[in-house]
Length: 329
Image (cartoon, rainbow, N blue to C red; front, side, top):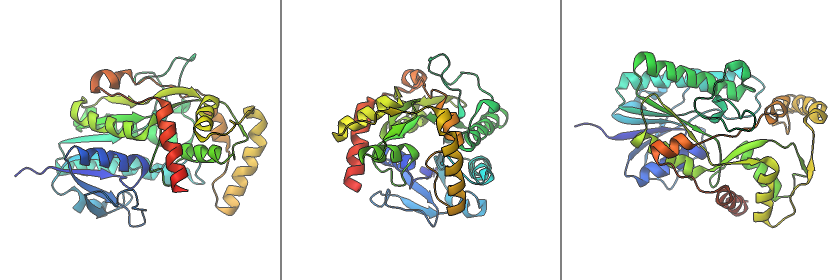
């Protein structure tokens, strides 16, 4: 009898847990790959088989692939700053490669790989980028973005040359409930709500509800074409407008001081030095400032047309995110 197990990596995380919930709602028999150290609060109420394993140790994944029909690879090391970029490269690039090889060997019917808009071009002359906007690695800023670019290129090559049955999705900037770590964007939202965001460097980003991103993953499985990429985004907003939405929802005054990137360069150097010395997350880094010079505006038209992807407005995503952070804290 053919198996019908759907394996999800990264299922304890923000996006992964949302994907798992949509899949369970569609009737999938779930197997969730988790690390022994993972916080499982996002999946405690989910009907699923739990398998403990680590992408950095392929030998621990053998059991996870038994009888698997579909694979959703959502796990990733997502940090905007790392003291040792090689650690992130091993997790996001080599870990993805090993997982894809194991999926091939296990005869997985279809794979949905969660990449990121971080692997894509940014807006040019204010025009949102799409899946086909040209980009090279030397245009990618930051260790996380480079790792996602390399992993995506590797997966695309395997699809083209080895027939890997994969569909790639590129989420933009998801926000919403269950952001337990939180993500860098979630931290910004919570800082703004607590009035700990007196100033900001304005940039452009694409905001999407995490549950819409999750729905897009499953639509990719159901309707997507093998070897294709689909941006799963929402509304393009300037950061100042994003903070205005958060402030309106939280009934507070929005941050009004807009800073120039160059003025913050010395602050970034000090922040990185303190982070290395005390093993803490820096508040601002040189890479963050470099990223902020690019508008992260994207078009989801391809996903809307081919997958029937229908993201809700950013206002609703912000409302759900603010409500969740207030309830949790």
